[in-house]
Image (cartoon, rainbow, N blue to C red; front, side, top):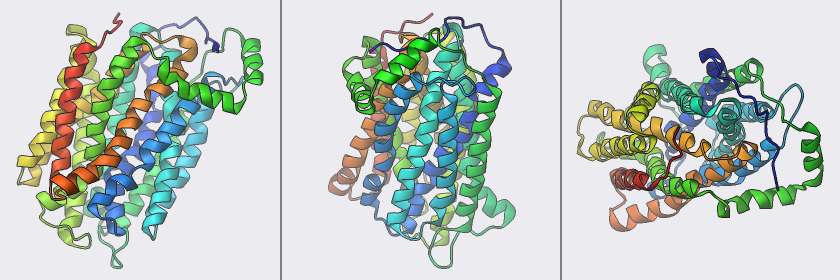
Length: 440
């Protein structure tokens, strides 16, 4: 089935136009950062064991697997004279995600927190996936690396603030980071409330401050939409994995090992740091909650580094190539993850986060810049959705095997999950050398 191309006229956009069209990612990353730095803490506080954490996190990759290709497929085939093509999905996702962010920290049982994670992650995915295609829609090829870098900047900036919020509320405003009833601390609750407001505000800024180019043939688009049933659309979305261009297949392997490493980090850093460095697994103790807060600060640092690196990586790519830049960045991330094993003083975790931040900036930009160069404009959202299979599949694999590996071979010691992640990121870097990039 052929898609409908957007307008063939793509003038170069100004800095502020690219800023406005990317600003929504600031809010989206508030949601993801609060999820990544606090959900394991919430699960453990509500009674989850360490080896259960990967399975409880399964919501994140499964919702991505289901939601992103479908949203990509239908956002390619959407056009409204006022709201455009991608922006309706931005707005709907923002409303749902904001509701989920307010509900998540009020979970009173583990099963409630798991359901809220499903709702939150699904809602965030509705907003996020079309943002990737938005860059391909709006920017000429020579500006796409800068467009994805701007998205990476806002992702980093949003995550810096969101990850540090529990620490900020506790240390700057005196809000308790422990709960007397053993429940979720007030500092975490207020972090999610502020995150919900930030999410909605930032995404709606992009909705109202950006415009989109109309399809070249609107009548053809209406005809095609009328002929496509939802089941046919779903089937074509999931069959896209068998129709990927060669470069996309090569990047898929890089993505697999990159995101396996990231998922290991997001699931296990709180448990690894509190047990390996703070020497406690008691979620009601002061030491555990100080360690959990410090993980938030550490995540803020790596995202801050990513925000800075987002503007430096295109320079390095211009001097070398995009695939070499991505390889170097992934090696930095691997070094950061592996180094945490040797740390005794938590302050040095911040040094490890420098390498992780460089890798994160590249993961959020370079694969998409390489991919957008070889995709047809009329199926940009569709293929970006399919490409996200290779973000969620490694997370599903990680959810299925990390708990088993730790329990069976590493005495259920969480720090080894970060070591496994470091090795995985080295493999991702080496696979970059196989990528054929249509670089301009």
